[in-house]
Length: 172
Image (cartoon, rainbow, N blue to C red; front, side, top):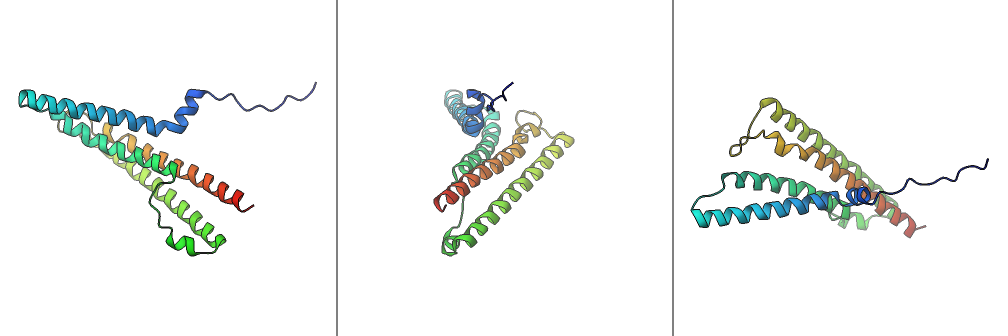
């Protein structure tokens, strides 16, 4: 019997899309929801002289999530903050080493941030703190933050691998 040819597993288009664009989708949904909530709050305030008390709480926590998931988008595209003046003056091999070190340190910082954010979520859960307007557990708002830091780290690593591959093929 002849050997079976090796095949890659079939790519599921929706899962492939989500693995590439998860943070963009999350940011789009968050931004749409925040825009609608803000607009509804303005309409209610001008129509009734009252305000939606929970809108401030929801918008503040929405901005937090928008920030961390937006940072994942920036990391994937290589648009994170970087000081390249010194690296560009170094010899090629040394510059690659400095960039690799910065990647390792950045990913370490993001993993540490994820760990600390997880500790914060656990503390909020154990303390039973509730939000001031909606009186829901505070850890609900914070639960996505540790995972967002992990996503930023993953996207940062993905971009770095692509950059090192491109640099290697340019100089091969």
